[in-house]
Length: 159
Image 1 (spheres, rainbow, N blue to C red):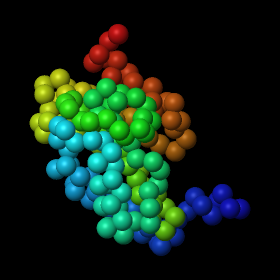
Image 2 (cartoon, rainbow, N blue to C red):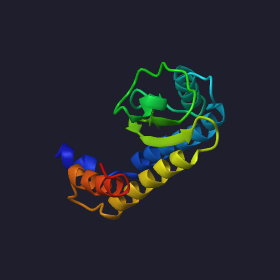
Image 3 (cartoon, one colour):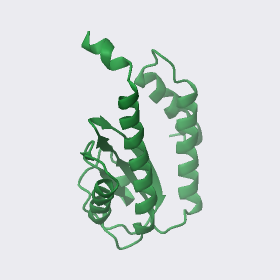
């Protein structure tokens, strides 16, 4: 009975989910100017938490990931203690509003503008996302969607 109640959200639950998503989206906009060489991942993490609080979030939905340089390719990296120098920084964050969470990931070039190689990586990641999203349907498994995305990446960067 509880499981079926959780599937369909009422208006207040949808509003909390939307608010969490809006706060997370606005947080990305506010931290983007802070990303530059010499800044630490920890500084960005602190700015994320402070922005969540200022914008009215109840807290964080999960521990933030601020992964720059070589750390950007480590799944679920959470040390957030490196100094950003170059390359991309992958930021995976989410806040909580009324018990409902958001979860968003964005990548930014540390030097402000992506190199050709970084731009290619961003484009391939976006294409993989689009391909998986196009196949999203009720009953689709995460492993199926992951396989679809991986095929796009492997077609671009064969091993």
